[in-house]
Image (tube, rainbow, N blue to C red; front, side, top):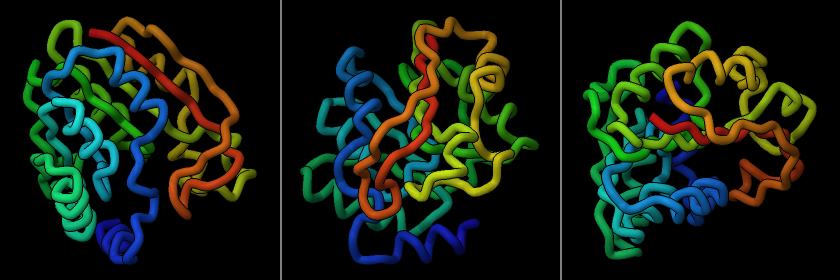
Length: 197
């Protein structure tokens, strides 16, 4: 997968755009700035936005090309992001470190998904928040982005089970119109979650 993402992020333009995910932006505005973790952060659009809002941001991804573009975007916005190259399955999340963790289109295979989500829960401080937006299985019929493997797509029961130790404040499937660069464009079936430790 590293090769796949390096090749995709090697394109000159920011393939998911430079603007943050709308749901992430709106939810972040409701929180007091603190320490934020963004796994699978790619080109850094969400990380850089959060840094402009006074968040201390840790981002991680396995793509060197993604990191290069994040650093470029951070310079354009005169902020800094702590961006680490790591496979998310091997990342040391550390316990009770983060005020918020955002999983924006961070799709994991079933054999590691639950474990990664559990690590995210442990990494939250008490009162910390998970913000998640991803594709649900209905997305398979759309051409607006996302994995074409149903086992990588998320359902309400799946996320309820993964985040059972958190208080789920909001969890919903919805249809939206994505405008996030060339690779997230058009009608999409997504799932959104807000959960608090």
